[in-house]
Structure formats: structure tokens, C-alpha cells
Length: 120
Image (cartoon, rainbow, N blue to C red; front, side, top):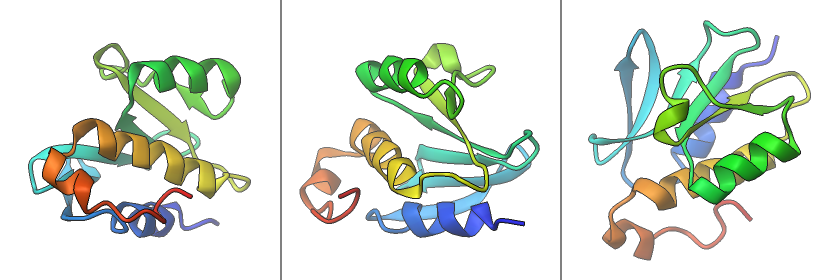
């Protein structure tokens, strides 16, 4: 069994001013306790992450890696991307996608302190 939530936490907490709380029955990560960075979805098969995505990335990942990425129900039409988590998940790629999510929704002041090494 893979501990996906620990991996998701490690990535999310590498960004500045992230908090975690339960939202809609599962762990969710917020920027400055307001803007949603990601939602962990253990109730899906396989477990998944939902996150906002820049429009170009949204369509790119869905078309290039359709086995890993999808438009999540209820949120896909709002510009959110679903990431399926399996035993062979490419966590560097997940990190990159979550970095894009952070850049999309974070206040400009936080972008200035975003560590250069995150997502590289």
C-alpha cells in the first residue's frame, strides 16, 4: 500500500503558507487558509488529487497522459485537473502540476518567495 497522502503533504507543504484541513470529507490544502491548492480524494479508485490548473496545462496533460490526468467531476469545468495516484505515480510530475496550481491561485507576494527549487 502506498501512502499517497504523505507524498501529497510533502509536496504541498514545500510551498509557502500552506495549511491543511478537512474539506468535503477529505484532506485539502489551502494557500493562506483561503485559496484551494489541492484536494486529496482517497474515495476514488485509484486515489486522486484535484487541483486548479492553468488552461494550457489543463488540456495538455489531459491529452498527453490520459491515464494519469482527467477532468474531475463537479470541478473540471471550473479549470480543475484530476491526477490519478497509483503505485507507479511520477511524483516529480505531480510536483510540477501542483507548482502550476500554486502559481495559478497564489497571491503575487507569495510567488516572489516561491523557492526556485520547488518543482525542478
